[in-house]
Image 1 (cartoon, rainbow, N blue to C red):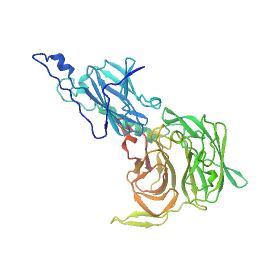
Image 2: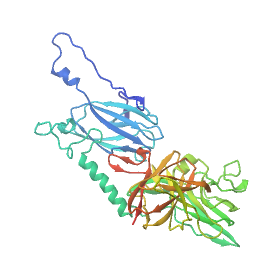
Image 3: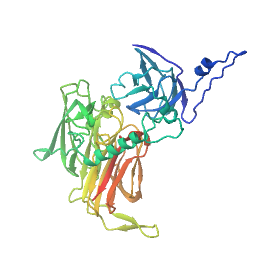
Image 4: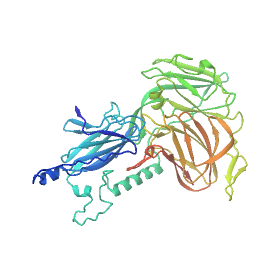
Length: 469
């Protein structure tokens, strides 16, 4: 396939150069043909992220040049191109946070493929269609009767390629699908029960390459513990003696690190620093005593980790108190807005929520909205949520309708818990938050970096909800 680059100009976010063409003529040479050639192009906005193109269905008028304003909101470099008669018209590489302009000559009526031409990115989902129609009136905002008035529910917007009604319907359907649940057959993070060997809790896991369904009907190449993303949840208590046995079934080496847990140096899982990685078909064995405070910890790959962790090789280790259950002080705001301490809460509902980004897209517990699972509670319940970021980006998690209580960070209970509604979680960080579910309804809980959660077709990616009944 031949590729040609036409007028691809990358600029920094916030600085968009508007280029206008000026023509001159001598005598009476400025005819209708010249005026048509100088016609302003139709503007189309496109958003790139890891690894999506939005909108997926772009509509454009025939007999008009097209000017694509391409914004890269992902952390990786991307391109944007259109295949025309076997050739690809494309931008240069667009840096993260940058904008490029791609000018395309007027296209004949038909459907064209758009894609990111970086090797492998189209296969990960960075594809779209450009449908060129003869209905130029809709693109220009002129009604069919020439009156100049438009029905916004049926007019195609240049920025999305969809009508307003299409946009609203797609957004609504996504919410309905989410609340209905059961979007995918696979679920990650299920609790793995150990076997016992003379008082030692033994956890056996495989490490393998799988096709993981991140949303309904969308499968992506993943790496997984026991076939799921996240891997099984490990629940242990302070003082437990534990043994982990991993078998590597992948076609590349790997090793496992216990993130945040205090372990002997030989059990640290850093290749060629503390241990050798396991080749395909080989085993990794770790044995140690749980000495850390109750809270959330993580096990994940530490070999080729950009790809392996980004592709799903992570799971939770929940350390429970030596005896009994969780005990956290509770706080609330009085009518004057002062923080007031209450009695320790009895936990009614407990959830673990992994934040992920990378080759699988923007995920919560390995799924993209609407395939994410809601957090459900009854009115009056105390809800404990373990949060971990095993992605490569900051994710500020925001809960609507509530001020949650941040009670623990990186496994350590906070001497001074605090109330918040947005919590910035850096890569590798873990937090425990407590919610008193006193307000009924479905309350959105999502990353507040908006390109991670919502576009013209509705919500996607790192979105779930606390549903209080």
